Image 1 (tube, helix red, strand yellow):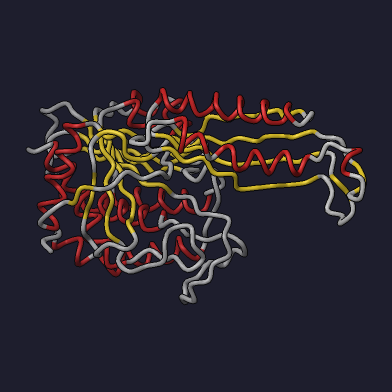
Image 2 (cartoon, one colour):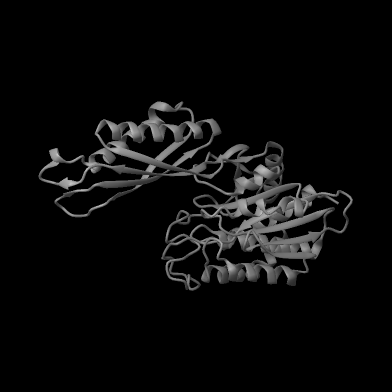
Length: 386
């Protein structure tokens, strides 16, 4: 695999950074230790500017090329936060924070971009400016949105932006991408069903909220199967069913359902939200109950820009010899906010035969580091060729 030789030589050092971050995982915006480590390393690399506290705990490093004739700036982004999961990997650098682990590989993403930043600061073989972005709170906090809202793109003059995520189950160091909609919009809903509580032996005197809610769980599946064009991608999942009583002989007064809706089209996203409300209120009313729906918009659809996707493919092909066409992914990714602000693309890198992400046994594969760091570097050097 023709990765950058210098990055291959740096693998032990980058791996050491990764293992340290893995041992000390942090959640959401509370990535204080990780952000401080990133900032210290960027300064040690000789970055021209290091800014902390953007997006609360985000870090941005600026690296100027040997020349600046192009007047252009390329942004590279990695996420830093972990997940509230108890680790079960058995590695000697496992999480020392109970109930928190890097189960999505953000420790690897951060370390790969740190490796690229060190290389770019050493060589500066490009015409323009590279901006390395280390983002907090990708796992549900919208850290990318907050960084954009605080003016990151304009402040650093970013013209285009690129990101990467590991890809379990695919050969280490291989790449995959697709143009257009790639990752889904991720919305959340909470449905409260209010019935009439009573004795389980006298259901005729009550309005059984558990029966109403059970009908809702099934009926909501008809949104994807009967309301939306079957060629479109839609997921509606009820993930929590909580009754106001846990007694064996009580019909509870209230049931709360929680779940997620995933879509890849703005119009369909709107339709799904409306259908959830219509189905919930209608079915509840038919039983004499009342349903209220709290629907929260989450991350938008992440859309890769066509031209920038081709640039990403070219860079990946230089490194691994090819770049696969990725299927659609119904998971969410808040890099979507950055791609709404600037043209760019998001690519997947193979993590080998590992556990899936968000699993207690997941671990980022260090063997992917040279290829990932090389891709970040190639995106700068190719887009800002001297």
